[in-house]
Image 1 (cartoon, rainbow, N blue to C red):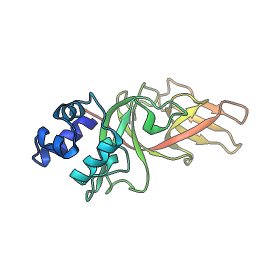
Image 2: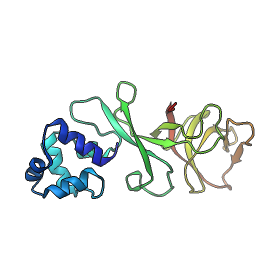
Image 3: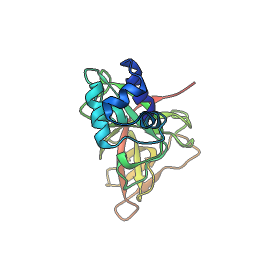
Image 4: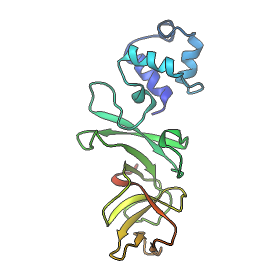
Length: 202
């Protein structure tokens, strides 16, 4: 769900017209229309006013992970088409969708994002276009499916195998692709997060 759709939903749930909300925010009605159509992003000051009026966190409005509507047990997380290395998650603009997660199934003390599967190297477990829910973490157990960076590029999905000699093997599930093993002198491996759930639209 986009920021604009969420702002419109909050307004309509409270039964406010754009003119009435504009008065409460001390802006003109055209600004409300621009916010709700995603043609203009509210300033931090306006976001804080939205938060007070609708009794929600600003992070809920923005759709950030771990941040939820007050009094409710779920969060809306962003789904990214790609995760370039070295860029903070909140600064990445390649947001393709959003997903709701319930804290009955997820730990509210951890951070989650969604990531679109691109390619067939992890077929048949993961299909091209699937959304995977990733728990952000800098490490994982051997045998875990994880989003990893290789030499600072975009995150790729592979099974991480930690070998006894200290090397790391990134193993695809699709046997058409070969696993690759990395040692201390090879390209650095960095864990972005581990797969917690697959979501597939039929």
